[in-house]
Image 1 (cartoon, rainbow, N blue to C red):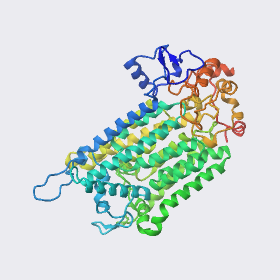
Image 2: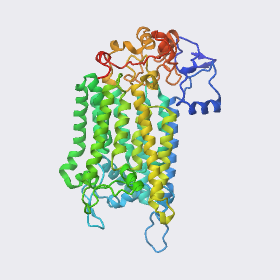
Image 3: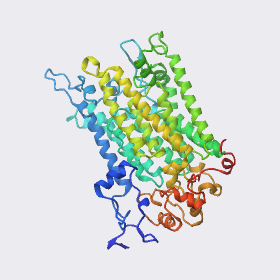
Image 4: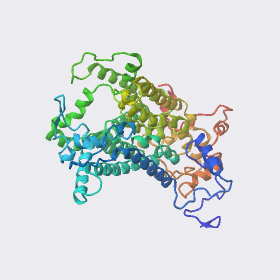
Length: 586
């Protein structure tokens, strides 16, 4: 079909008029939109939007993901420089302090030899004795440990076939970078599909400054990929498979377990615990399949992850170290012996996190509208990081996809992401030491406190939008979606017949005959005004927007006019059930 004299890659919409300005969805809001308009000017009234045959939104976002992953590799490149000894000894990494003053430190490089991977030793079986006489094993959960082992075996095979070029540890790191980069792109892809009608929000994830410094610091991208894919499977109404993937994620890192907390809150409100139970059972089975062989074969090595996390003190980026550094407080467990677990600190951090989870439960049950799963998941993971005794710098990556899905606002997320990313430079300077011209502890802890406050600010924004759903950009974009305003709800979505308080646009969507074939449980985010593309699947939504009022991203005043409520906009609650409407404060 011809469109403006060119062959259109998709069938033309029934309504051949141009998209309205509100339907031309751009990445982010506020400053980002201003920058885009300043760069190329606003989209013309008769522009053919959404007809690009190759540069689809997903490909553009993936391109940014690759670019920022490349920046992430380059940020570690200074630590890959090798020595050239003249005495016949083997070349090695030139870690003469540059890992700190060039901020290129990455855990895989020292762990390659420290954990016996360079010797071909099997994780959890191999042990070593530290200078203090402590017996140590692989300190990672099973799936992360096996990832390191398989990567090491691949690097050694590479080195055996092609012995020239980089030394073996660099080949190990490069191979790991390739695999972890692929996992991050899987996470970006899954988040893109989970975003429903707001695919461009994923650009905040693909181009997050945190990727530059933290993507390859450790192995957390694997767990992020599992968590992101699990949320997509849940959104596509595959609770069992979502449970399987979450179980694998927990076998790689603990934090995917917290997503069950968000699902539990929504399941309680919906009174649909059966589907959640299936997911939990599947997760347990998947976790046991991965862990049982190591638990039985190498019980001491398997317990090392749990022992280490129990015995380790507060790390410099935890709130407890911040309070110690800024107030002179001696901290908990002052008189504990070497190697003894900080029992009081462990209990305090556990109680505080439990209190945070209870707070999320209260928020989830008292909000008039059922909170979105991404909102609850972000709050739980954020509360864990804020109250835990360990906040390793790369842990902030856990929050990125959840934040993008929970509160896709540039002015809210970018300050935190940028500051948290640059905190890595301060972190490395702090470890370099004042004697080596590093920053002093008081300044470092002050910067950590600022980062924590920025995360708290994001939490506040999420909570405000939970109690004020009319401010929620995601709900407004999915206002007329027959599957509800939470693109992640999946089997926990509210019944369509009970969404009477959604206002005009929802009612119009119910009677207009349009369906979101590519909605959160059926396919990609090409419906409505997702990227300005109006295919046959998404065209009905765009046409309905013109017939019945402004599109999903249109002014809130339209909601008030369509419901006859004067100037006060009605909350676009399309996810509550009948019981919630009778008892809004439960």
